[in-house]
Length: 192
Image 1 (cartoon, one colour):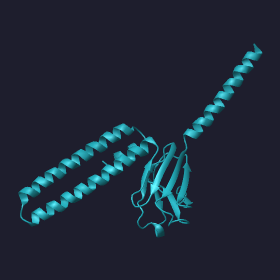
Image 2 (cartoon, rainbow, N blue to C red; image 1 turned 60 degrees about the vertical axis):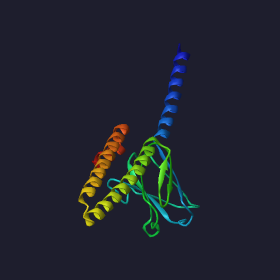
Image 3 (cartoon, helix red, strand yellow; image 1 turned 90 degrees about the horizontal axis):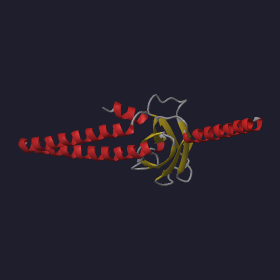
Image 4 (cartoon, rainbow, N blue to C red; image 1 turned 135 degrees about the vertical axis):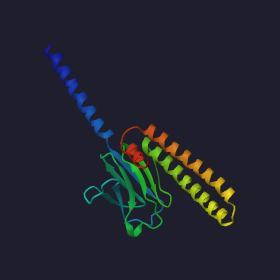
């Protein structure tokens, strides 16, 4: 009986140790970054919390051979950004530091993939950029038509632009429902 009890306690202890190690691993976000080119080697790149960044909670690493890596166990929305003096031509990248391996490419058109929420965030970023481009084109067309005296066609273009805005808002709301609770959900709620 004692041997069985000791064996069960040993198995339980081993199981709890192995699951605690696995759960510790699962809570870490590893960001594997690649720059478009090596021209910024030696520069710093930052992982900046979107909400309340301070000197104490901003992480930085040096870019080497066009690559960089961050590891964090804090779940948050963050921005990856190159130091100011080397930022020209580089697009900041919004990410969620969810557990897992996140691959990011930093350059003129920065992007990310590899974790569920960041894949959704990248999809949203692409759709948002398309929406803003369409809205800008519609605005330019409306201004041109109004200057040309064609208010009827300008109104038609405005109604089409308003429809695009509704479709985009609905898309964002559906994405928010897909995400559920957490930093990404809060980000979408704050954008309403």
